[in-house]
Image (cartoon, rainbow, N blue to C red; front, side, top):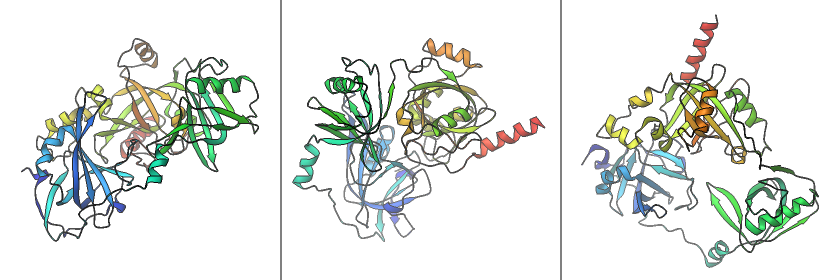
Amino acid sequence: MSSSAAQIAHAAVEYSTFASLRLGRTVQSIVARLIRFWDSRNVNKNVEFMGIRLLLLEEMDSVIHAFTPANRASHYRPSLKAGCIVRLERFEVAQVAHMYKVTEHQFLICFLPSTRLGEVHTDAPVIKSERFMMRRYDQLQVLAKLPDVVGEIRSVQGSDLSNDSATTRVVVRFLIEPNVTVYLTLWDEAASTFRDLLKSGDKSKAVVLVTTVNPKLFGGNLYLNSTQGTSVGAASSPAFTCVDTLEGIKRKEPVSIGELNAFISNSDEQTQEADFLCKALVVGVNQENGWFRVELAVDDGKDSATFVVFDKEMTKLTGKEAAVLALDEDPNGEGDELPRCLEELAGKEFVFQIRVTPFNFTPNHRTFTVSTITECNTLETCGKEHDDNIIPNREVEVTLAASSSGQSVLGNRTGVEYAEANPPEVEGAQKKRKLSSE
């Protein structure tokens, strides 16, 4: 049995409780009972095997679930035994960002190539053998219903809003309780009816009753979707913002990092979709949170930012999946060395095409999405290459650090906040600019 799945004789060494876990890849370990585990498959992709999900119960009677991806599943499967107490080390803690939660815990434990898993034989804590997430009938009945909601419209976004015969999607920012705003998505007949309301030109009808909506939780946020039985009725109230995106912003406007910071910071009520081109130099790769989620420290000569790129997008840039890179660098899966192809990104200049949507302006998710990354010398060249569909359909999460022209915009897909305004790599680049100017 390899060292990363070796048996551990005791649990006397200090370990964390589930409540004290911190987001990211830090020095944390847990001791828990492996209640059960199962294969996770994607029913939308020919039942493709995605990995193994584990359910862990600790002595504080809290449950959390863990996940090991498909490329590491065969390595850990021989060590998995339902009912045994295990010690888990060198893992990553992420925010639960999918619709269906296996447990009530907000975090998920992700296995890394260096993760260690072993059975505890001595000094094991007293842990119950099982725990269930039970629900009463009335709670299940609520989940099965399509409720009615009433709220105040804060803003509206959709295509061809003045055409009441259009049935394409309309997105409404909807205040349903004091300080509680959700996104209401209207489709088909409900969208057409809502357009008819807008066509009347009376935007004072901002209090709306929407019937038979389908609520969904995604990433901890509530979204309401219309159904075939949805109807819309309005009453008078203060006016709201209405943005028609039929034309949108056709031209891809070149902007600096500072201008991006200013745009997102000064546009709390913005709902317009827009595309921007931002050219920046990669000055380093941050390894604090591992490189399965690559954090690129970038600089455009005036301001700096952190662009967070995930495995799928990095594969298009490096030509290799993270799992393959891990095995190439360290066949035993124990090393933390940064792959050479990632090291070589430093010093290269890329143009990032950024797609800004209303999702970027939610209070807990101020990030940008990059739809295309190209390596070229000028923004004009990259704009032409994008029109020719070079490197298409790339989506990258981007988190901006503080800049001189805008306030800090913190956070990423897993909810990790970056407290440093300038990473060490960026500070070095700024010092070089200062010396060159002198």
